[in-house]
Length: 449
Image (cartoon, rainbow, N blue to C red; front, top):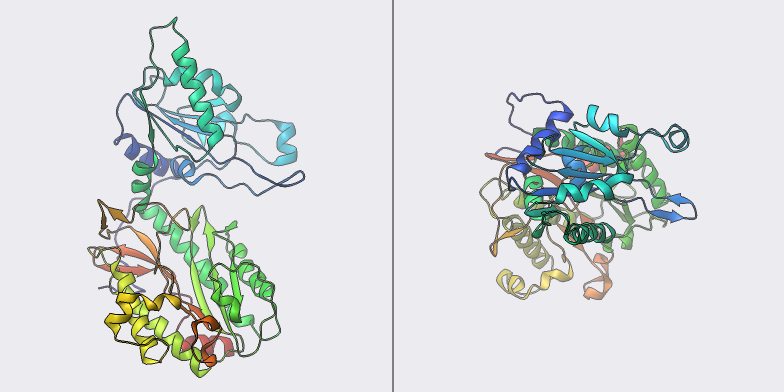
């Protein structure tokens, strides 16, 4: 098995962005019928408060197929259409609005920059798209994600059915696009892996910066600022998700995002944070002592979690089942907790009763890609799916000790998670986030330096 740092070197053809997205659409077209149609809207802008809106981020499925990152757009793939099978509905150029809100690609840019065969104003979609749907067998779309758009689709279907003056028929069936497209997205291609490596490097730099500046008396949000500054300096426009910067007992809250408390001497700091780069996520967790030195109890539990991750890595090659790395991590954590007296009974008893879940209650990983909890089924026909080259997922075992667990107080409020991003290869795996230190010695040396 190849190690964390290695990766297979081989020649790859260089594609332009337009060619990359065209290939993705072609792969999707090969999975639908010649008389079907694909309709995918992007995300909608959301108000934050007053006249302020949240920063816009394109819908992942829409962006995966188009690379188009503006709001108010709909992608249509219509195989066999004489004037072009790939159509974008989008906003037109508007010098006044662009002066206030930023540049738009317009219809010309949709064709020239984003490879559309044809483009129409988004305002004209009610007049044009129903005609494109006529005589089609199936409509593939992201059913249920955007209820307002679903209502529009149903309205267009009704319009076609009520127009009895023409010898046309409405599509016979709506089909959820998710299964087909998400299986396609699950296997990352070379261009995607390159972006995820970049996201991993910038995220690792942020975690290293957090270790270097951390000291007792700082606030969690000050560490967050240092961390995310590194993301932005490296070119990340967004976080992949809200940063978790959890000192002391806050580390035992899995999705703690308040990040407002002071960091105390003698506590651990758990950071779970990732940069997003060109819509691809990274997701790293590191845990380190606020004062730069692990206590005996902290080090003991930390080494158990680190050993659990190493054991999980051994099950991350192609051909292993999805659940194997989780089972491997659980066995190491359970045995470690038994050895330290936090759990009682034999390993088999602890695993059977799942008593370990009071200290380790989450899964060991999840798919990673354009979404931090990325798309793709974990089971196929009722069985855990087999890992394949190109899959990317997190490996993130942890231990969290709350006072309610009833163990000796010297273990209380220790929360530890160690998380990396793994790319499956035919002969092993790559750790895309190995640049972030995680051994006790490396962490303490970095913080002392």
